Image 1 (spheres, rainbow, N blue to C red):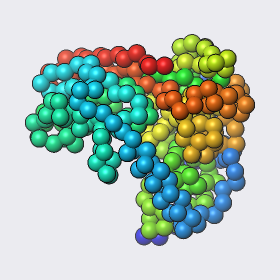
Image 2 (image 1 turned 45 degrees about the vertical axis):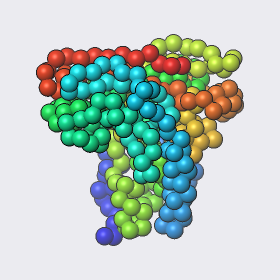
Image 3 (image 1 turned 90 degrees about the horizontal axis):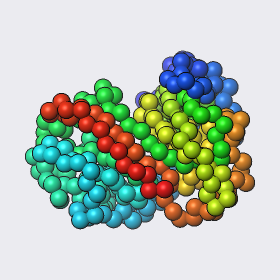
Image 4 (image 1 turned 120 degrees about the vertical axis):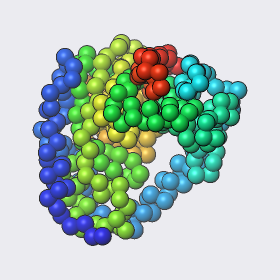
Length: 334
């Protein structure tokens, strides 16, 4: 199917109101439209051959990284369990679900320890965290719990907060980052802030050229942040923040923090010299207090090969079977 332009692409891009009402007492950060967000580089015409070559190379890197995931049933840090659900504190560096090569994963370890009514590990999964993210994950043991948890997540009845260290000193104490996201055809398979010029570059491409996800319309994305404290890492200024992904997009917290000018400490994809576009795809971070390149490089050197500093700290929801209100908290390991 050949995509032509298309009012729907550009209307979707320009209709995102990045000054939507803030969900906190802080300010709302973004732009009145994606066209006023400056890309890191001018959008070039998309070459399907180049895109697919980059994608294949990056997927090979990710597959090699996935193979390093190691966890057993004996390693599990269980926060809560009953006959219907299990809540586990996931360590960084572990996959939530098996890779295509069926490597070690958190879901398989939970299944080995607790089993499930369906007799299948994949029927226990109701949400997931990225491999580099630590924190709280819920698994369903029964069919009733699986249906109930899926309904809770679809209706956004699950409240989650993350704790992170970000580069530099944030001047604002709280606010909402509001920037639409899209798949980045220049750095596949990663995400970036959507701009009008990058949407226009997709005109005339088909699913056969670059796949369905790249051609999806920009996704409105909102991240609430609250500053918890200002710290130092080997003499470098960092800020501890609480983050809430209001819209729940892929890699949203990482892209928004980078685009705001305060990338997550240890983020080797969206941080300084990472695999994805710098600054979330923008020319520079949008915050007046954005971390300098020199500071980001110094922090990256201090972190080295250590894990990314983002942790799924709290999760609250009604029990999918009993209806009891449940709330769990886990201390960040950094």
